[in-house]
Image (tube, rainbow, N blue to C red; front, side):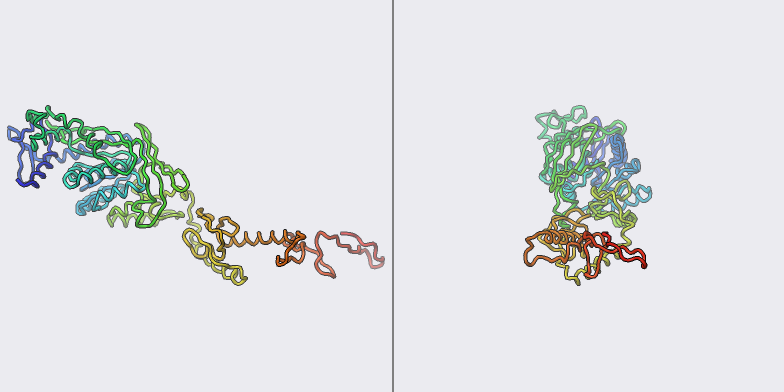
Length: 521
């Protein structure tokens, strides 16, 4: 037997149901399939047991998920044909199920099943590397409520990964979701497999018994929890709790060879970036992501690095559109998402990291701008831009248009003419223009108006000052300032007369009567 054959046989053994007597003479290998044959000659092929095993996985997970008070997100790695994700999505239609599969054919089999059942809260992506995916996910603000790794994925990890890769994957996995379920071989089957395939290793602890009741041997007791505790590694600060769940039911006269290892985050601190795979877009904004939980409550939030602003996660049932698109979302689902996106209300920042998938729909979630829509304003966008452009032309002809000031996105016409030594920063999108009066303004028009008012007030002060210096602006009369405000004045033979100055005019009574003494008005 070649080493590869031995490795395949060991993997198949770990997936067998556990009978009371697991003596190797009862276990047969035929055509690449391992099956159990009892002394009576009854054969229980693995293919038959698998169906019962998948049902048990679904029912066990349902029992856990039913405890959740509201909708949630659920990510499955290596989802195959959707044997687990799809029935769960049907059972929890308000929740969001993301199924990732490396085999494109299996992914499309899953998609056909989703379409037939109309469980559109279950979306599917094709990924090439789980390790790269998790490395990007752990440094993004996307945070899952539940994650699931099935027995096939776990065994593939054991067979194909180095110990360092395995450790890093578990460490990243436990830091990307509040609760993670891993379906892995039980302590009993690991102990039996070691006794069967590596008898010299277990000889000091066993008399080579293959009875289920004699296992696990001491080195394998509590194996499921020890595996996680001794393996997980990541650049995070993460306190977790672990529990082992048994299947809700098993095949007749046997026990399933797997258990669920449930990992719950209790206190997580991790530095994250602006969005999933941020390097492709050059975003530099950083956050600290925090998660604190106990048996009944959880709190997840971001702390924005540059100002310490806290952004709470009100729920954990959404996954960002940018993450899904970069997780290899199937083209048919991508087209469906576009149809949903184009029908959304218009918000200020509809970049794909502010759009999320939740419960079969897309929604906008930017914390700072989600309370205001622009559906009524957008039809006037062309007219507003034309106004700003034409206004700039006239200001230029007056000789009052300098260079453009900078705004965060360098939008044209927003900050024309008002370049100054003040460069902000002006981060508020309602006032993005740095103005020469050292304030942030909505547009260059508002800035010009503010600067003109300042110049006008300065001229008034200079006029009232007896020490006006040569070269200072000359106002013809202080009353002209009053005129600008009141828009009424008096004039006579000498021209303009201040409204504050008393003007003497005669009282006109009757032509037959001579002029009387002038009346002061």
